[in-house]
Amino acid sequence: MKIVICRRPDQATFLAAHVMTDVLGRDRQKAVLGLATGRTMEAIYAHLIERFRAGMLDFSRCTTFNLDEYVGIPPEDRHSYRYYMNKHLFSHVNIDVTRTHVPDGMAPDLDHAAKLYDQAINEAGTMDLQLLGIGENGHIGFNEPYSSLASRTRVVTLDPHTREQNSGLFDDGTQQVPTRAVTMGVGTILQARRTLLVATGSAKADIVASAIEGPVTASVTASALQLHPDCLVLLDEHAAHKLTRRDYIEQMRHHDPEIIHLLAQLG
Ligand code: F6R
Image (tube, rainbow, N blue to C red; front, side, top):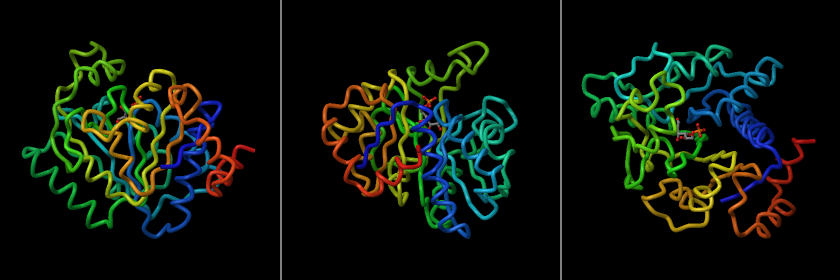
């Protein structure tokens, strides 16, 4: 695991956009991106749109798979993650919408649709890069505590903490947040060639420390990233402030060629 701590949140999200740009530029023909939603991602998508407008990015050949979707919320509903993706990224860039995938939370047979989602990921050759945020309960995607670290895309029950965390976008608060979702499994996520976890803000400090320095446990599904052979973590100072091995992270900053190159992007 490589960890980069940025002074400001906008620097962490800027670097995330840079890493994604690199993947898209490397193999435009068939780049497969795993995408996430949430507040942290909004800034990353804004940076990507800026880069697209500046002619630095071409999405025309890439394929995307989103992590998750609420059960029972249709794609055209402003609370759905499909709507989020259209609003924050897809409608602003030259992506072929037929190559964008978000789990179907309205499928008559949700279990079957989830299986087909994993199948589609495999057929596309799996994600070159999976972008991830972390929930305050340690989830990646909607892999709530106790999710098997070998889990595949499936229907899950949402943790009350997650529903509370996500209630801001729903008019009537937590009551309106669905109780179930479809999410890529932890095992599906770990299949990505590279994983990129981005976290900002002090509300994430405790859980970031547990995920990175704590034991690998289904109670904090982000800790499974410790098992991923190529995981990059981008944090701001607030999200990083409970990490105890700052001396080693500082060492990486000065000696890891990839990190040196990345930080040079901040000018
Ligand atoms: C959303 C997702 C979630 C979020 C996480 C952090 O697709 O997969 O795991 O990344 O809940 O959300 P924010 O950024 O809103 O704190």
